[in-house]
Image 1 (cartoon, rainbow, N blue to C red):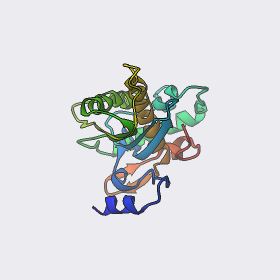
Image 2 (cartoon, one colour):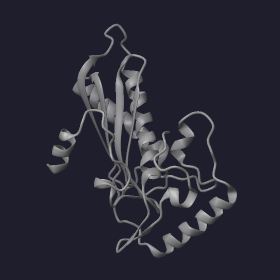
Image 3 (cartoon, rainbow, N blue to C red):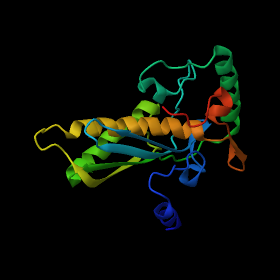
Length: 216
């Protein structure tokens, strides 16, 4: 209730806290610290599609061969790969962490995909289902028996879909998956390392550098 009240009191368009806040406080992804991340896009139609994600998965968000975030491979443009020596050092650190920490027994990546498009209940359900592909692009392996991954979708109905285009929903569906992937990357980049009773969980930024929560 307090979280809803705080959100209601914030100014429209205000920045959303990311990283180790709220449900992201105890989130982990593989051997790394997880957290909260957000992303949004405005389609050519003027429709906005946005996502808020709590990245908390049993699978990994990094390519074991290069250290690059899986999600960044889908953003388009040139991908900046970590230097080999940086990746080697990160690998040693992660191996130490994996040997010391007990793996979390259960993980759940949570996401809310919101749009100002006018959607029916069936269309919103389709959006929620398609948005799961955004998790699959950023986390491997994904949707395991120990994962309770859930995506919710909501629509304000301010901008009706083009009635003359039977497939107008498609661009909203595609955008929903895209913003979920971007939000997971932002969550991981914004997370800070934690060392406490629950274990020592390094952050991606601490291992590989780069600005926390940079735009993806």
